[in-house]
Image (cartoon, rainbow, N blue to C red; front, side, top):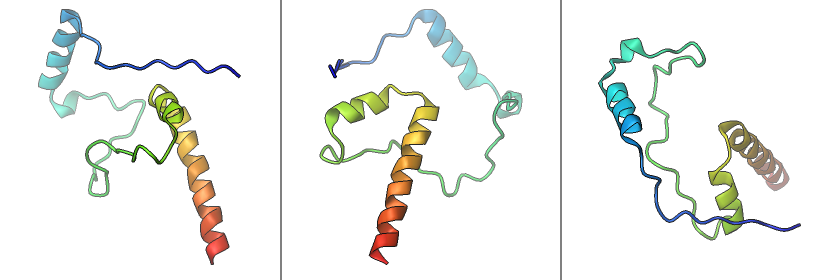
Length: 94
């Protein structure tokens, strides 16, 4: 199987329209947020704050690059697979 790799060394530039939209969102009060597609999260005490950074030797670079461009469903599925492997290893250690 051939692998295609793309390295992005910089963030894309935002248009003035995108910057205006972001500024309006920043000014919007929380009471105007539409939660129709996701429930609000009132308790953030157990939330991970800041970016999650993996050691560079934890996963191969091509896997990290692929994960970075995936949608949230794919990332969730990958996390579920890793959790399953973790559980299997914990069971074997017991």
